[in-house]
Structure formats: structure tokens, C-alpha cells
Image 1: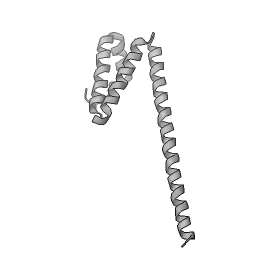
Image 2: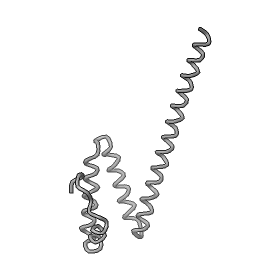
Image 3: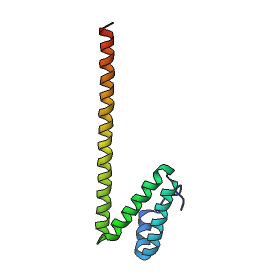
Image 4: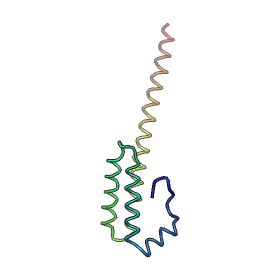
Length: 111
């Protein structure tokens, strides 16, 4: 499967998982590997580490639900960090804009 081809529909994936769990796992690994290989080179090492972290969490989970819960928690934490970084960037830009406005006001006041 190439990244430009759509994934099989949900029902087909469920059937594959039910009737050929090893085939499903092979497919899952292939799709993840292909996604990493299609990513920009600068992101590949981080994506490979993420896939390894997810695989470790899946192997340590007692049930598929636990594995999904751990993956969901990882995504929520990542989204939280992204929001925090966005807020910090927004505050930094707002601070720079405020300094520019203040400097321009000072320049005009003393001319």
C-alpha cells in the first residue's frame, strides 16, 4: 500500500483483524513504516521513536482497550504541549509587538 492509496474501510480492517490477526499486524506495521518513510527526513527519527513508544505501550497493555487508552493519553499530552508552545509563542509575539508600538510612540513623542 502506498501513502497515496486510501486505507481499507473500517469493516475491512475489522474483518482482517478478526480472521487474520497476524496479517492485520503486518499491515499495521507496513502502514506505519511507510508513513515514517514518507515524512520529511528531519521528522523521521522522532516518528520512529514515537512508533517504538506506541509499540512498547501496546505490548505492555493488558487489553486492546488499555493500549488505545495509553495511545489516547499520549496524543492528549502531545496536544497539551503543542497548545502550551502555541501560547508561549503567542505571548512572545504579543510582547514584541507591544515593544515595537511603545518604541514608535517614544520616537514620535521626542521628535
